[in-house]
Image (cartoon, rainbow over all chains, first blue to last red; front, side, top):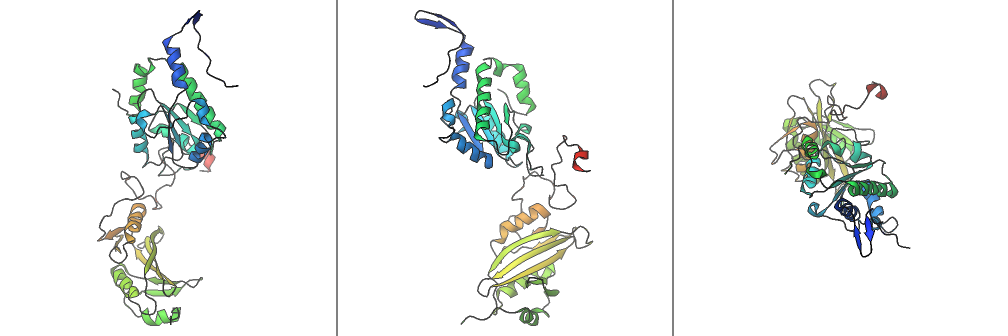
Length: 180
Length: 169
């Protein structure tokens, strides 16, 4: 039995169905997230398992990995980010088009992990905003999938105006990210 | 026919009186350590490269060590040399003070020294005179100190979420 996405709340009659645009777009976005894997270490190996046939992230509409940030919706940061790498990560985030989400996978991406040292960024949230944190060292593929499901919920329930709000702009500015 | 690997005694007889060898000793594992003054380093390397009993062909590694308690000789350069044909390994050491941590570059003797010297400069701040491109190699360019010197903490110092009492401090 193939499970497909449930239809959103709406008004239905013979030959028509009416609902709000927010819900339709949210549903479409949530179920076709194009992830950009930013894998630097062992969490990246878990991500490979996540994409493989056993766990198969494709079941959640994330079949298509995007290796250019310009076409990606979801930045998945998996692994230790050194301070030297931080500007590159920020540039990749900058190059993604709105709407965009960030999933921080593993202890290192979330907080620097065991690498409490001069050369390692103590969590990617020091340079870019993060939507969902997945703890673990490394997290199992199930946990990464749960993180993606949380991102899907965010995408589904996000107001279409959120990315234009002053609050959102202020948040980006607090990371020194230019807003258009 | 191949010659035998020169023994410590042979090396001593050949080099102990050389100007570049301040002292020679054999460590517990049989490896020969030679203490060399910085100004004679190139001469030492060139002599060993031309040494007919065991010509040195390979610079296995070079690095620095920080000994903050040795006043006037806080830094020490260590060079590992290998004579591949005679299977002889040698270790050259150069003592330096932290204020004048300058040694001549080995780039012109061994091309492979280039990146190793950049790494040593990056982490210990040792200057290599005559190096073609002495800039940081591993750490970010904006870093304003040399992190392996022991006066600097290894931990990231930008964190404010750590309670010292949980770290025994």
